[in-house]
Image 1 (tube, protein in one colour):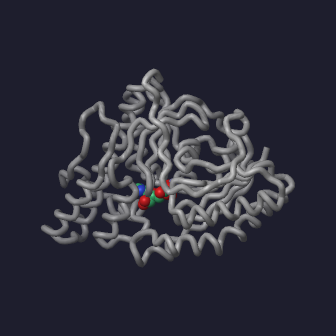
Image 2: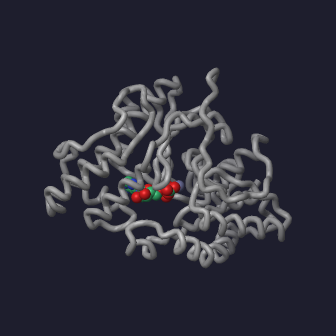
Image 3: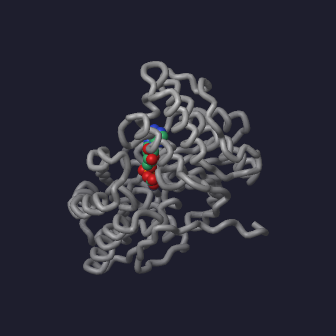
Length: 345
Ligand code: KG4
Ligand code: ZN
């Protein structure tokens, strides 16, 4: 089975051709950093216009790279939410139009469920396919989402705890803007933190209770704003220390709570996903905590941490092959909460 995956939920335009084993035949990702950089964050109107320009060319390109034409595509998968409405609509219209014209069924995909499945992607010709292992505990930390989930199957994903306010990536982006670093903030802060002392400034951590699986990053953001108001934007070692201390205050709760969730759930496998999962300090801390507790850690390669079309195709491909997903007319949804587990689960 070959699935064409389309992702336009935020500012990355992406598509890919993937089979039911998660093998990526071809993919293309066009980021819009240059367009949004002057504003220090995503401007929704600009994002949808760029999707509209890029997507048709990119779909043609990936089909060519995969060396298939539309007749060989069994299903079209498209992110229907959560995300920016204008951006989602571009992907949905493209998927629906193609599906209608070529007689291919269209499958709406949940963006966070797709992120959580990204560890099972592999590249045709260079990696061996990775067999999905259900159930597992998943952390998804990105620019729009931060939560911990129980992944029982490709479509059975339950929310164990999420952020009450900002997402982790959003905190990175906003603090980067505050201290004059470029967009996207995560990679910029990570780079600026190299050689810094993560313990030099004691920034707050919310919901320290071991049983809480919720996050909050707005208090941390305020604390950094106050610190900068008092001391100014530092230079040299001071900048490294500020970035390292802020980064530590984001990654520590993410890692500790994800590992606590895996222990609480009694599930010895943890997946770390989403754009923030490309952060090396987070991966290292999670690696340490997991090896102390005997938990197996899975993480996608960096380019499948951030938004991509391959994870969208895989969400649908696994749903179709396990008979848990049906074709539907997609409709854009900006918020789409995943269910909480039933009391008896
Ligand atoms: O998953 P993603 O591409 O989009 C959403 O679904 O939101 O994640 C983008 C987010 C941005 O906020 C970006 O700053 C953050 O992921 N990010 C990082 C790193 N790379 C990307 N955050 C921390 N460290 C990184 N290396
Ligand atoms: Zn995402």
